[in-house]
Length: 118
Length: 113
Image 1 (cartoon, one colour):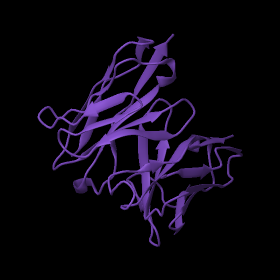
Image 2: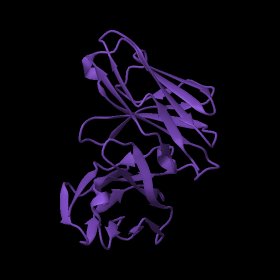
Image 3: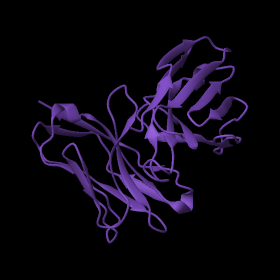
Protein backbone atom coordinates (compact mmCIF):
# COMPACT_ATOMS: atom_id res chain seq x y z
CA UNK A 1 0.00 0.00 0.00
CA UNK A 2 0.83 3.74 -0.07
CA UNK A 3 2.28 3.77 -3.58
CA UNK A 4 3.06 7.03 -5.36
CA UNK A 5 3.84 7.18 -9.06
CA UNK A 6 5.40 9.90 -11.18
CA UNK A 7 5.28 10.43 -14.90
CA UNK A 8 7.40 10.79 -16.86
CA UNK A 9 10.42 9.21 -15.22
CA UNK A 10 12.79 11.03 -17.54
CA UNK A 11 12.32 13.95 -19.90
CA UNK A 12 14.61 15.89 -22.19
CA UNK A 13 13.37 19.19 -23.58
CA UNK A 14 14.60 22.25 -25.38
CA UNK A 15 15.22 25.50 -23.58
CA UNK A 16 12.10 27.68 -23.53
CA UNK A 17 9.57 24.87 -23.57
CA UNK A 18 7.31 23.84 -20.69
CA UNK A 19 7.31 20.45 -19.05
CA UNK A 20 4.54 18.90 -16.96
CA UNK A 21 5.26 16.25 -14.34
CA UNK A 22 2.43 14.22 -12.83
CA UNK A 23 2.33 12.74 -9.34
CA UNK A 24 -0.34 10.22 -8.42
CA UNK A 25 -1.19 8.41 -5.23
CA UNK A 26 -2.31 4.99 -6.44
CA UNK A 27 -4.00 3.42 -3.46
CA UNK A 28 -4.79 6.22 -1.06
CA UNK A 29 -6.13 9.74 -1.11
CA UNK A 30 -3.46 12.36 -0.65
CA UNK A 31 -4.79 15.43 1.07
CA UNK A 32 -1.31 16.95 0.91
CA UNK A 33 1.39 16.59 -1.70
CA UNK A 34 4.93 17.92 -1.67
CA UNK A 35 7.32 18.73 -4.48
CA UNK A 36 11.05 18.47 -3.95
CA UNK A 37 14.10 19.14 -6.04
CA UNK A 38 17.29 17.19 -5.58
CA UNK A 39 20.64 18.39 -6.86
CA UNK A 40 23.44 15.90 -7.51
CA UNK A 41 24.85 14.44 -4.31
CA UNK A 42 22.63 16.72 -2.24
CA UNK A 43 19.67 16.31 0.03
CA UNK A 44 16.13 17.16 -1.00
CA UNK A 45 14.99 20.76 -1.21
CA UNK A 46 11.32 21.32 -0.54
CA UNK A 47 9.85 23.48 -3.27
CA UNK A 48 6.20 23.65 -2.34
CA UNK A 49 3.36 22.08 -0.42
CA UNK A 50 -0.05 21.66 -1.97
CA UNK A 51 -3.34 20.79 -0.39
CA UNK A 52 -6.16 19.51 -2.55
CA UNK A 53 -8.44 22.27 -3.69
CA UNK A 54 -6.26 25.15 -2.55
CA UNK A 55 -3.25 27.06 -3.81
CA UNK A 56 0.20 25.67 -3.22
CA UNK A 57 2.46 27.16 -0.59
CA UNK A 58 5.90 27.83 -2.02
CA UNK A 59 9.14 27.84 -0.08
CA UNK A 60 11.24 30.94 0.00
CA UNK A 61 13.21 31.45 -3.18
CA UNK A 62 10.99 29.23 -5.34
CA UNK A 63 9.31 31.13 -8.19
CA UNK A 64 5.63 30.26 -8.22
CA UNK A 65 5.16 31.57 -11.75
CA UNK A 66 7.90 29.30 -13.02
CA UNK A 67 6.94 26.18 -11.11
CA UNK A 68 3.17 25.88 -11.45
CA UNK A 69 1.55 23.39 -9.13
CA UNK A 70 -1.98 22.11 -9.48
CA UNK A 71 -3.44 19.69 -6.95
CA UNK A 72 -6.47 18.82 -9.03
CA UNK A 73 -7.80 15.91 -7.06
CA UNK A 74 -7.07 13.78 -4.03
CA UNK A 75 -4.90 11.49 -6.14
CA UNK A 76 -3.19 13.83 -8.60
CA UNK A 77 -0.82 16.77 -8.41
CA UNK A 78 1.07 18.27 -11.33
CA UNK A 79 4.21 20.38 -11.48
CA UNK A 80 4.74 22.40 -14.65
CA UNK A 81 8.16 23.88 -15.25
CA UNK A 82 7.42 26.83 -17.51
CA UNK A 83 9.93 28.19 -20.02
CA UNK A 84 12.53 25.71 -18.85
CA UNK A 85 16.21 26.62 -18.90
CA UNK A 86 19.30 24.47 -18.46
CA UNK A 87 19.60 25.51 -14.82
CA UNK A 88 16.21 23.86 -14.20
CA UNK A 89 17.74 20.49 -15.02
CA UNK A 90 17.39 18.39 -11.90
CA UNK A 91 15.72 15.44 -10.23
CA UNK A 92 12.18 16.34 -9.18
CA UNK A 93 10.49 14.19 -6.55
CA UNK A 94 6.95 14.32 -5.25
CA UNK A 95 5.56 12.89 -2.07
CA UNK A 96 2.06 12.40 -0.74
CA UNK A 97 0.55 12.28 2.67
CA UNK A 98 -2.75 11.37 4.20
CA UNK A 99 -3.44 11.34 7.89
CA UNK A 100 -5.26 8.01 7.62
CA UNK A 101 -2.21 6.35 6.02
CA UNK A 102 0.82 6.45 8.27
CA UNK A 103 -0.26 9.53 10.13
CA UNK A 104 0.41 13.19 9.54
CA UNK A 105 4.14 12.71 9.88
CA UNK A 106 4.73 10.11 7.15
CA UNK A 107 5.24 10.97 3.48
CA UNK A 108 5.34 8.45 0.66
CA UNK A 109 7.59 9.30 -2.23
CA UNK A 110 7.34 8.91 -5.96
CA UNK A 111 10.28 7.47 -7.93
CA UNK A 112 11.31 10.89 -9.23
CA UNK A 113 11.53 12.58 -12.62
CA UNK A 114 14.85 13.47 -14.14
CA UNK A 115 14.60 16.62 -16.22
CA UNK A 116 17.31 17.63 -18.67
CA UNK A 117 16.93 20.97 -20.43
CA UNK A 118 19.15 21.43 -23.46
CA UNK B 1 14.62 25.54 14.53
CA UNK B 2 14.56 21.84 13.93
CA UNK B 3 17.55 20.25 12.27
CA UNK B 4 19.12 16.88 11.49
CA UNK B 5 22.80 16.08 11.35
CA UNK B 6 24.12 12.83 9.97
CA UNK B 7 27.60 11.53 9.39
CA UNK B 8 29.28 12.47 6.16
CA UNK B 9 29.98 9.86 3.59
CA UNK B 10 30.82 8.02 1.69
CA UNK B 11 30.97 5.09 4.05
CA UNK B 12 32.73 2.12 2.47
CA UNK B 13 32.42 -1.33 4.01
CA UNK B 14 33.04 -4.90 3.02
CA UNK B 15 30.16 -7.32 2.67
CA UNK B 16 28.97 -8.79 6.00
CA UNK B 17 30.46 -5.91 7.99
CA UNK B 18 28.54 -4.16 10.77
CA UNK B 19 27.03 -0.83 9.80
CA UNK B 20 26.36 2.27 11.85
CA UNK B 21 25.29 5.58 10.35
CA UNK B 22 25.00 8.27 12.98
CA UNK B 23 22.11 10.70 13.09
CA UNK B 24 21.41 13.36 15.71
CA UNK B 25 18.66 15.91 15.78
CA UNK B 26 17.59 19.17 17.31
CA UNK B 27 13.90 19.70 17.79
CA UNK B 28 11.28 21.26 19.98
CA UNK B 29 8.47 19.03 21.07
CA UNK B 30 8.33 15.36 20.23
CA UNK B 31 9.10 14.73 16.56
CA UNK B 32 8.85 11.48 14.66
CA UNK B 33 12.12 10.20 13.23
CA UNK B 34 12.72 8.47 9.92
CA UNK B 35 15.32 6.78 7.79
CA UNK B 36 14.79 6.93 4.04
CA UNK B 37 16.90 5.08 1.46
CA UNK B 38 17.58 6.08 -2.13
CA UNK B 39 18.98 3.38 -4.40
CA UNK B 40 20.94 4.51 -7.48
CA UNK B 41 18.69 6.17 -10.03
CA UNK B 42 15.57 5.73 -7.91
CA UNK B 43 13.35 7.80 -5.65
CA UNK B 44 13.19 7.68 -1.90
CA UNK B 45 11.79 4.77 0.05
CA UNK B 46 10.80 4.84 3.67
CA UNK B 47 13.11 2.38 5.40
CA UNK B 48 11.91 2.68 8.99
CA UNK B 49 10.47 5.12 11.46
CA UNK B 50 9.92 5.71 15.17
CA UNK B 51 7.29 7.99 16.58
CA UNK B 52 8.21 8.26 20.26
CA UNK B 53 11.13 7.94 22.64
CA UNK B 54 12.60 4.45 23.06
CA UNK B 55 10.73 3.14 20.01
CA UNK B 56 12.81 0.93 17.73
CA UNK B 57 12.10 0.98 14.03
CA UNK B 58 13.23 -2.00 11.99
CA UNK B 59 13.05 -3.21 8.41
CA UNK B 60 15.15 -5.40 6.08
CA UNK B 61 17.65 -6.07 8.86
CA UNK B 62 18.14 -2.38 9.60
CA UNK B 63 17.14 -0.90 12.92
CA UNK B 64 17.27 2.41 14.74
CA UNK B 65 16.23 3.40 18.24
CA UNK B 66 14.75 6.79 19.13
CA UNK B 67 16.99 8.05 21.96
CA UNK B 68 15.62 11.23 23.44
CA UNK B 69 18.36 11.53 26.06
CA UNK B 70 21.04 11.69 23.38
CA UNK B 71 18.76 13.12 20.64
CA UNK B 72 19.93 10.39 18.32
CA UNK B 73 18.49 7.91 15.83
CA UNK B 74 21.50 5.93 14.61
CA UNK B 75 20.95 3.41 11.82
CA UNK B 76 22.47 -0.05 12.30
CA UNK B 77 22.67 -3.33 10.44
CA UNK B 78 24.51 -6.40 11.62
CA UNK B 79 25.69 -7.72 8.25
CA UNK B 80 25.51 -5.57 5.15
CA UNK B 81 25.15 -6.78 1.58
CA UNK B 82 26.25 -5.30 -1.73
CA UNK B 83 22.58 -4.59 -2.45
CA UNK B 84 22.49 -2.21 0.53
CA UNK B 85 24.65 0.26 -1.40
CA UNK B 86 22.57 3.43 -1.53
CA UNK B 87 22.20 6.87 -0.02
CA UNK B 88 20.56 6.94 3.40
CA UNK B 89 18.73 10.01 4.69
CA UNK B 90 17.75 10.69 8.28
CA UNK B 91 14.74 12.97 8.75
CA UNK B 92 12.34 14.27 11.35
CA UNK B 93 8.79 15.54 11.29
CA UNK B 94 6.84 17.31 13.96
CA UNK B 95 3.76 19.34 14.66
CA UNK B 96 5.75 22.53 15.22
CA UNK B 97 6.98 22.43 11.61
CA UNK B 98 3.58 21.48 10.22
CA UNK B 99 4.80 17.94 9.69
CA UNK B 100 7.23 18.95 6.97
CA UNK B 101 10.20 16.61 6.74
CA UNK B 102 13.48 18.10 7.93
CA UNK B 103 16.31 16.26 6.19
CA UNK B 104 19.85 15.32 6.97
CA UNK B 105 22.38 15.71 4.18
CA UNK B 106 22.41 12.02 3.34
CA UNK B 107 25.13 9.40 3.71
CA UNK B 108 26.30 7.40 0.73
CA UNK B 109 26.99 3.77 1.62
CA UNK B 110 29.22 1.65 -0.60
CA UNK B 111 29.44 -2.06 0.07
CA UNK B 112 32.27 -3.95 -1.62
CA UNK B 113 32.07 -7.70 -2.25
